[in-house]
Image (tube, rainbow, N blue to C red; front, side):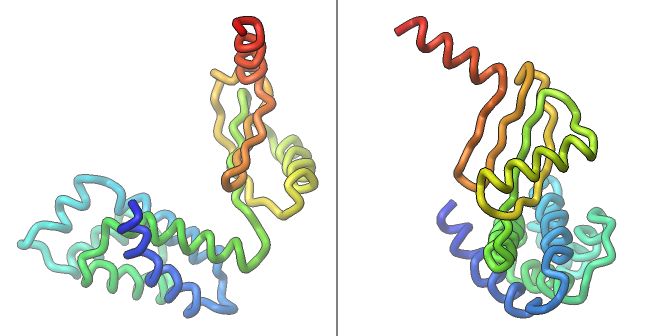
Amino acid sequence: MAELATIARPYAEALFKASAGADASGLADQLQTLGQVAGHAQLRQFADSPKVSAAQVFELVSGVARLQLSPKVANLLRTVIDNGRLTALPEIAAQYRALVNASSGVSDAKITSAFALDAGQLADVVATLEKRFGRKLNASVVVDPALIGGIRVEVGDEVLDTSVRARLEQMRVALTH
């Protein structure tokens, strides 16, 4: 993985420098979608075929993503394909998102909840979490009924787990030791 991160860094930094003052968050979303598409094994197998041109790979990736790509992201995608680095695209997207977040003082937060949260509940949770973590958060919600109740929040390498499942596990450990 370290090699993939090393390969991805210059691409992410170049896009970040080129997008100064532009809609960096929108570019990050486009890049994230392209990264998800490029992560599919069948697509990579198609792209690695010597019978397929770089233009065909570009058309396939951009077509599957179903996005109107900004010129900067389209240029990055062409460059990545031309250099045979399509496998690095998910890592490029992750590093670009980290650069955008660092420059704006925002962090991504993954909220795992036992139940779906409506807009009002999510706004309350995010406001509380922003106070707790001391920074602005971009929240994404995943529903996992196995939590039984409560939420689990991941912000970078920090984890806040207030789920019933975690509390039951803590009780089990306390009772067995």
